[in-house]
Length: 292
Image (cartoon, rainbow, N blue to C red):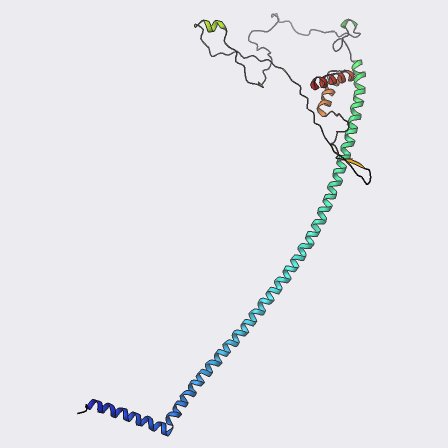
């Protein structure tokens, strides 16, 4: 026998199929599907419109932002061109001022060179005039103290008076008075330790003490300091002109003496009352000795 459950199931399916068949025959299901489809089409249409509106708004915003940035870039470009133009003008002004300063510096250097040349000429003339006056002055001031003239031939003899009061003490250094010794100088070379005498080496009874006797021997040396300048000569084949580099101030002759020798000769002429001829001979002898 067929199962009762299967019969009921088949009856339900049959009823459902009859109902669907009836709906299809009457067109009711078609109308409902059409309404559902239209409803979905309207929803999709409204969604499409919303998306189109959003896309249009986004496109407008993009255009607005793009125009804004274009305007900002144009403003920045104009500002940059303005700053570049201003910087170029300032640079041109600075170049003009630099050229003006260089011209003023060159003029000042030329003026300084001219003043140095004038000063040197004036100093040379002054030395010549002083040298002319030194010889007559030295001849006038000659006496037995600074020349070979004997004291007996002195016209106006100096009377030396003794104005000291007699104290009854013996002449010479007094007890307790510190003697006037020669000042010790700073050694210029290592100290020389003298070996002990032979008697100390032979006799062991001699012991070294803490006392050391220090004596100095002082001498002087004069060194020749010569600076030689070389200047190459250049010849122009077009103009026939010959040029060379300028020598420093004071270097005019083949052999020139600097301020140290001039000061030394000035001291000889004034303080030592040495004539110009003897000073010249002294300088010639020194240079000849150094050259050998």
